[in-house]
Amino acid sequence: MTFAQYIGSGTTGIVGVLNSVVAPIIFAFAFLAFIWGVVNYFFLHGDNETSRKEGRQFILWGIIGMVVFISIFGFVNILLSALGLTPK
Image (cartoon, rainbow, N blue to C red; front, side, top):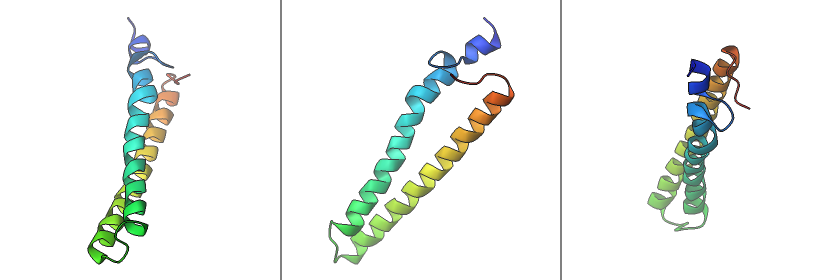
C-alpha cells in the first residue's frame, strides 16, 4: 500500500473519512452552538441579563468555532492539493 492509497481520496482512506464524516459533524456542532446562542439570546428569557450574556457567549464561540474549522479545513485541502492528493 502506497502513501497515497493510505491517505486516500474521495470517500476512501483517512482523508476521505475525515472529509465525508468527521468534518460535517464538527461543523454541525459549531453551528448548533451558534443557533442555541441565538435562540437563548433572543427568544428564551429575553429580559434576564444573565441568560442573554450566556446566549452572547454561545454566539461568539459558535462563530469562532466555524471560522477556525473552515480555516483549518481549507488549509488541509490546500496542503493535499500541493501534495497531489486532492480529494475527489
